[in-house]
Length: 324
Ligand code: PBG
Ligand code: ZN
Image (cartoon, rainbow, N blue to C red; front, side, top):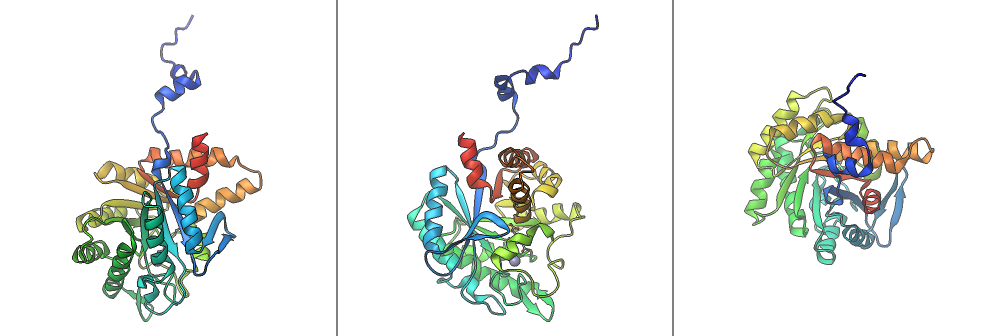
């Protein structure tokens, strides 16, 4: 009789064996949960295209932060909708804006939670672009001065990690210099180093009221077709002083996550963005997929691809499922 010596199935024979040889373990410690803070008090309104995610006033954001901490989720990323918008997005560095107030309140009430402050201008500008406009052109270097103010205001409010998502050239160096100048040497920078111009941001732009009022973001965000350019962006941001490198979106860019992970000696984050979340929620709501299974598989695969940190709207559900 034919003697089969090589039998990979031996390693899959039982749950205990599969546990023993599993190469990747998803943990609640991997997660960052993004929230959207809005003006007012006692606001908790579900975002239609992101079921399970809410617009929260600062008081309710603090309550949610407590829940995150109690679930063992280590970090929250704060996005905001301001009281007012203008051409340069000045409410983005207003210490009385929802983001800064939420960061200060969470830092005070839930000090163990790490706060990631998203730094950009598109939620705050009347035109919805991520910087200072000259005609229809987003002026890179004038935008840097604005981003410095946003970063410093969030560090002052209590952000532990500054996460610039604007895609201007040189912004990591500019933000690092501004933080150091104000004494925030220990505030880290998680750079959205590789951020593609993606259709997967659609639900977020509804939620954050941040869609560009004309054109699109292709002059500053990356072409989805490009891989070498991603590595160039990573090299530049590391040279400028980034502490953590992010690839965004996640699912259709896991090849880039792997390549970046193999190339650098810095933590790698990936952003499981709003459109990726919305697709799963929609299919689950229709009964077409098993939500728990799909979410845990998806997040595990992001980790297997090389992500150390996963920013995801699924974090609360996943934390509960991982608990068992
Ligand atoms: C913009 C920003 C975007 C997201 C967060 N900040 C993308 C964009 O509008 O271009 C997307 C996050 C998501 O889709 O979940 N600075
Ligand atoms: Zn932006």
